[in-house]
Image (cartoon, rainbow, N blue to C red; front, side, top):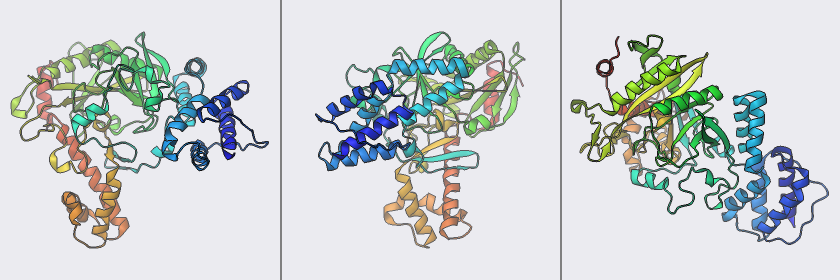
Length: 486
């Protein structure tokens, strides 16, 4: 049977790239045979050694389908199971991670785990690399072809819930090896934040380079408080090449699992991190800090310094102040009978030995005019982005729905061919008109460049929608009310 060759090739791959011990090869192969319902095995005399796990798994699925072992529609399940069996056990992953950390440092350890997660096919890098992505006007725009679109906030929330008691949610550590959720090849590593146990894992369909999450070992609700800032700075002390941040703990802002405390981070500097500071402030008694408004379409403040205790204090002043701030003339209401509406999204990077803590002020308050959120993408932009604007997008990396790849190509074709907008694309009328006006010529290349400009422009306008203070004077008044001086 040709499937024997596929199994042998996967085992060879695992010995070369997944640290499968030769002594364990027969044991693991026998487990795969049992999974496939095979009672015999003939290892080919010559086995090719490939470094392309996607090609190996595709061949495995096609062969299994043609030989009646399982239908290709069930290929994802069997690939997940097989790669989990070929991977090191969780304890061995943890041990290797700590070994690399102790010898080469946190950055090297994270790189090792990321490479392993790609090689064992948990991180679907080949799929991620197919996502259209471009940079324009200080923002990064991507179209995620793998992520489902949640236009309804209730459906988005239900997507992060778990019916039943095990695991308690989709990011609990008990998901490691959990077949019903295709997590057989998930591997996590233990970390500590301010002396407390957490763990780290990579996202299978990450939004940016080496996108991962730090998760509290305990299944405890998300929160943003003084301890959060301490934890974020401790993380970048250990893993200085990464940024780390926390979504505001509010419904309809981001896709976070609010039931389980966690942070998001990774190996990419996002656009907000490169934003300049302006309109500086001083907090009396903490003159060693540099504090300023960010030159950014959303409302954000940066605190820079080396004094961790001072940064924590200044951040807590802003956090508490914003949590309790109401100005109905600006549409800001901190809380109603529906609950809390104001919260912050903090993120930290460490550069040149100095911490940079970025604090984005967020609100999920709604109104009759804006039932999806006063400080959310306004209705005219919903055709491009109706989903929540979470931590990553608030920092300038937009994840747009996969449907847009086809829809925008059709809009571009209408423009480049000099045709009016098709009736089935009527909701893209604004995009059509603005793109046509931006295009220097009506050839395909010029129109495509104009479409990228249009998307970046819309994303910037969405960030302006999320800004709780629409001008610097309003932010200045807020900061001065908290005791900051200019």
